[in-house]
Image (cartoon, rainbow, N blue to C red; front, side, top):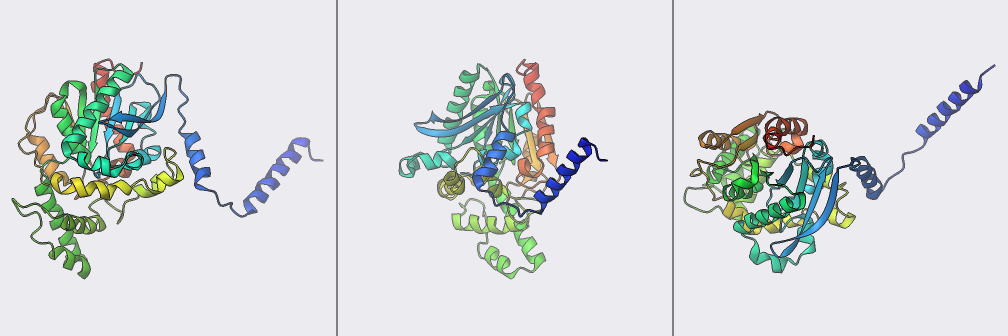
Length: 370
């Protein structure tokens, strides 16, 4: 005779088999987002989870602030693009970081939600490289006041590495360290190497369309001449296609992750990268003329992370610049399985490298949770 326990177990098994046999239900984006929202909810006593518009440089700019303990050091992330925010990816890339840092993602002017809530015509005259450094300074000052901290980390990636390095030169006393990811060092030289990579890959693959388009923009990044925006877009099209942006993928996956971000409504998620092309019309060409070869000294610690396969912002050029720079402390880490998108391609190693190289600098200053 079966016991009540065996009968109950049998009923559970039958129920499970019945559920498995049912056709999968199609869920809405909102269903998926609510699952992600609950999984990443900050529940620790000293945690912080803020998502808000902050008045910076005369306009409202979107900022998210998350961490398991507000006593941990602040890590302000300056995204690339220009106009390509990292906040939509934070649910995927930043969860582990939130245990060791208070992570601040910011949609810069012309990017993400900031672009969507402001009048583009009013913002357009302010789309200059210097304005972004000014905005970074204003946001850093606001964060220092909000959290009662003297110093923070600033991490700049790609376009953000230009903004971050300029900010580090301006306010080194505010920083535990400047962290460069896909660091811009000598943009014209980086562009020449990226173009050579794309053309060589096209010829090796026998891709006649790529060869024709790339040869059609030669000479690319000629010394002393600005690069036409249309030529830049052709170079990026094929450099990205042949693995210059993500090491082992022919296209970026960031947009897929952005579709599920709990920080954006359905409409905002659909339009989250709308500012990318708009921003590039103002900023892409001038930034690709920048050369930091003359910068050989930094008054705060310097940490650089580089993807071994990065052809978008050439990692070998960045390493050569790093070797020449003098700083109170510095470290360089290669990411062997990454191209341009280190935070996406090797998130585990990215977390480990920040905990190993950055967090001890804050610990020595007493700026970590007990």
